[in-house]
Image (cartoon, rainbow, N blue to C red; front, side, top):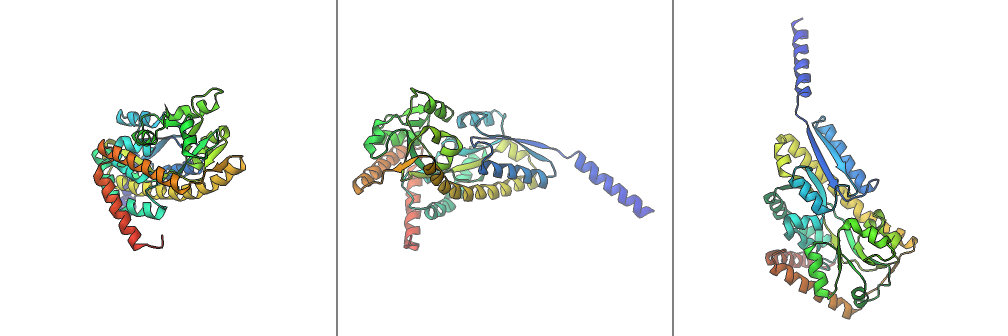
Length: 339
């Protein structure tokens, strides 16, 4: 009888502890459109956290840019309206800009090189995010960025003559277009589809990953794309430190470990889906063109280096990060000559 009573007391205590356990709502925003493979992974992350935290952490997800452009999302995190987000390099640059050394155009020859450099500098990047009030829990790539246009793309002069979109307020894009002698049209990413759709829209050329061009429906307003990708665009899953620090240690660990797990899965999906998306874009009628000759290649590398110097002098990407990346690349290429 005493054993039975002890058992029921213990059971009631456990139930009461669970009943009165503090709950946390994690409001998370992203530009990723709903009903995409990437968004399904974000939802899987939310479901896993809810299950493993026994309902203590519940996600409220705002996909497809419903919370606005990335600067809007960042402001809403800082004003505590949101607690986290999936940012692209543009948003990352507004938190810890040196991380964008990883998406300098034509710096890496393949993803093995960028994966190696990222692994070596990730501790510094995480520390940089932390100093700015964010916990970096995952690093999902956006994918290889191509030009897309309503007009043929056969030379750098073609690009200069087009009305090319620039993500408004992006220092990396500004440095590159200035170095190339291009006068872009700055717009929020939220306005791109509208301007591409308009009969007399302000832009006729954009840049995005193949998957992004499909998911955001931009492809339906375009006819041409560049064969050669400019860069492998970065991404980040971030949590506001004020929210993160309120969590008990075990829940912090859950958010960190599960965030990395699903960011890695998005990475794998991104690399797969971007390749498949090129074929889907071709089937939709998009013509991929413009294979550079050696003179054009050198011209574009000169533009990159000029932009890098400008970014370094402004301290957006400090010279030390460029130098460390260069040394890491030399090390990797020496150890992997076959690549």
